[in-house]
Amino acid sequence: MTDAYYDSLETRAPADREAALLAALPGLIAQAQRGAPAVAAQLAGVDAAGISSRAALAALPVVRKSELHERQQAARAAGGSGDVFGGFSAIGWRNQPRGGVGRGARRVFQSPGPIYEPEGEASDYWRMARAIYAAGFRAGDLVHNSFSYHLTPAGSMMETGAHALGCTVFAGGVGNTELQLQAMSELRPAGYIGTPSFLKIAVEKAAESGADITSLTKALVSGEAFPPSLRDWLAERGITAYQCYATADLGLIAYETSSRQGLVLDEGVIVEIVRPGTGDPVPEGDVGELVVTSLNADYPLVRFGTGDLSAVLPGTCPSGRTNTRIKGWMGRADQTTKVRGMFVHPGQVAAVLKRHPELGRARLVVEGEMANDRMTLKAELAAGIAAPEGLAARVADSIRDLTKLRGDVDLVPAGSLPNDGKVIEDARSYK
Image 1 (cartoon, rainbow, N blue to C red):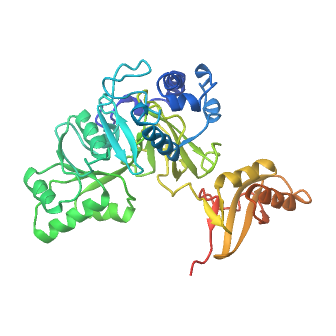
Image 2 (image 1 turned 45 degrees about the vertical axis):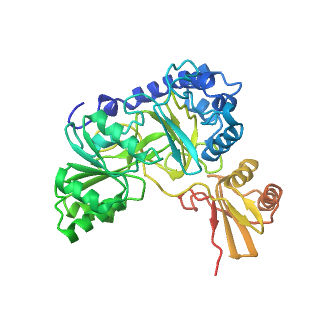
């Protein structure tokens, strides 16, 4: 490790990184087909050796958290013969290695749903050390970890990453503010890891009670929004805080650097931004859903839809890291809504667009009052294309065919709609 960077991977040439990521894909696919039955079913008939490009990856189906939940539920219903991970994990218990991996899960966690996630035996299994290092933590630091150690993996995710850096960890967990303040004032940790809201509470309570927690000068926060106003508030009180984006399924996805210009992607994932409701990548810079392929042979999630919106930022990070940057969390991609008693999904809007290549981006706006809904599809004409006669009527027919609902069509010039990833806008009055 250099002083500025966790390792040399962060500054390698983008072409070298892309080549390495794509070279790892066929092996990941093959391992998933051998050891993870659900992924094998998802990729039935796929030649693993042929998945060596972005285009080939984009042709594979997107897996969503709802599918993990459904498959795990079905496995539990099957009793003792069921796979608690729903067939998505290539490892079971330590006495049940599968798929030639030859090892088992070290821990098992539960996320809301419930959905169960395995933690394998690899050091820094969730790859959090990179984000912790970027936040300024170094070997020998005492870290106060206020993420939950109960049921969910957040506490372990951060602790194993801190251990990989050579840090010592105080397992604060959640709640018990007074006891945690006592530990902070007596142990004098160098920094804090946890949610930004609890850090703010701790700082405020310390000011009220007179507890000295001025040893805290750095922080890595996650799990919640971290607005610039809170970042600045903490800085005024001597704490330099950075954020990261991670999930219980995938581990680290992206992390903030000293440049404060977006989040840099982790080196162990392949990220795509796709049109909500589809698996189709959007042009660079457009807002869409984050779809992640984790290069983790133990838990080989291929094209996992996070349900979160983001966009790629142009250029490289001023910090010197050369990986792609994203804007961070920009909302949820699942914009499903109910119109006149019928669910309308972003995928149906995408299906309408596929029927009409003359169209580019579109947004279905639902207006009126409940029980008196009206839909209007605002659709951009593709650049350089004039609206053919009767196009709006044909698009309206497609809307009715695919949603079983009537909708108006408003054809607008290319570039007219906001670049915010919104496919369905619910503008109704609920008064």
